[in-house]
Length: 196
Image 1 (spheres, rainbow, N blue to C red):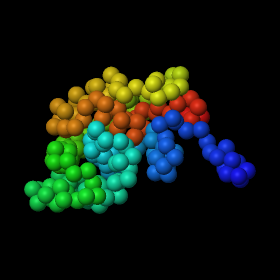
Image 2 (cartoon, one colour):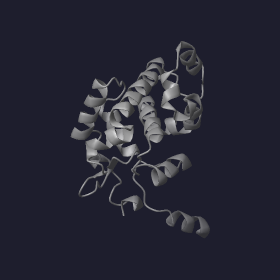
Image 3 (tube, rainbow, N blue to C red):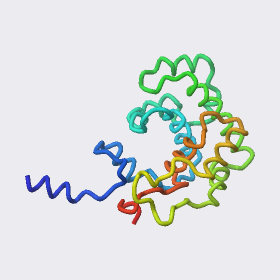
């Protein structure tokens, strides 16, 4: 009993949204809020965030490996070429979220993603312009879930611009979740070890 108490007390303080689920813990500790500059990874997170709309993020994390396989290891060139047969295949794949609108949006968004790469040199260069090339960190840091925003003026601008460039399922809340996931925003609360 003393051993388990010691083990529990040695756990670092984390953001209050983190459950005891190992997937959530790993995601929080090693991904959430850490800046991502690689286009392939940005594409993955943008698509996953669009699939998460209306669902829990843990649901998406549990299906992440299946998504990676279904979406050609997050290769936007391949996803952009998905046709009606590919969409039918995805709709029959129980390992992912089978939502026809979100699946079709992924193909549309892959094409828009490639267009941005062509126009800006990389999607990373384009998306990081919204934060001036560095993470947005609230000062002081949030103290609770209630003080973490679900949208900001930056996510509003990002959403608007992405939509103008042909993206869908990129509302301001999805964009802000994407910002947090990719480290464009770092919202670890004051008591979290990652905020230190």
